[in-house]
Amino acid sequence: MFSIIQAAGWPIWPLLLCSVIALALIIERLSSLRARRVAPNGLLDDVLGVTQKQLPAADVVDRLEESSLLGSVLAAGLRAVSHDTKLPEEKLRQVFEFAGRRAVHQLERYLNTLGTIATAAPLLGLLGTVVGMIEIFGSQTPGSGNPAQLAHGISVALYNTAFGLMVAIPSLMFHRYFKGRIEAYVLELEAGADRLLSQLKRFTAH
Image (tube, rainbow, N blue to C red; front, top):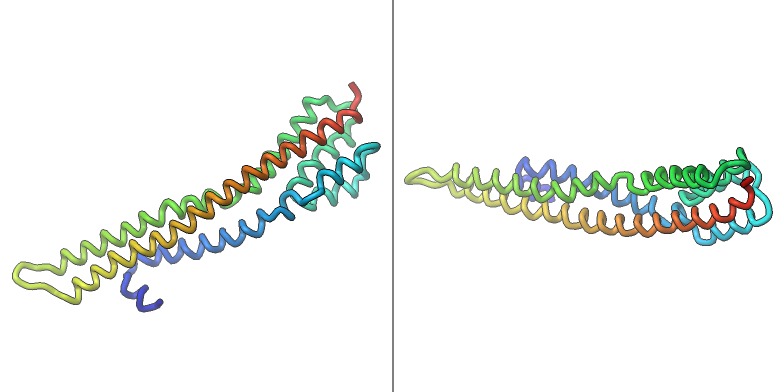
């Protein structure tokens, strides 16, 4: 591996940095976007069951908020109604929407960076290719040639192109995968907030 890096020349170092960052972001997002941390199975049904007759206590709402992103959205509505039983439906809906936007921001964290790496990695590989081509042409003087310089230029061009694609393709695939999961989670958060909103309207004065 070290010999490949030496053969690829200095243009490969930005690609190596991008690969390390991309790997760290992918691992972090795989951990953060697990269903247990976003929308655990049965959580919404449990909340609806608890709030069917009365509002839960403040410590229960606090634990709900800390449990997951869906829990934080549901807890925001519960806390708002507990603080003001005369809260209009429109205001309560705004509370849920604001909490939902914060949850979506958490879901989409680092995705822009991963998408940027997926876009920039081929361009960095292309930069290495251009540098290699410059070295190739620079080694060819009229009436003579430098085979070692020619081979080095070819190595720089090919290794950087290949490594740029090796970084970009997985980054792009995971970026699309995470976007799809986030869209599914957003729909689940919206549906959960809407169901709890319908139930909480019974506790507000009209």
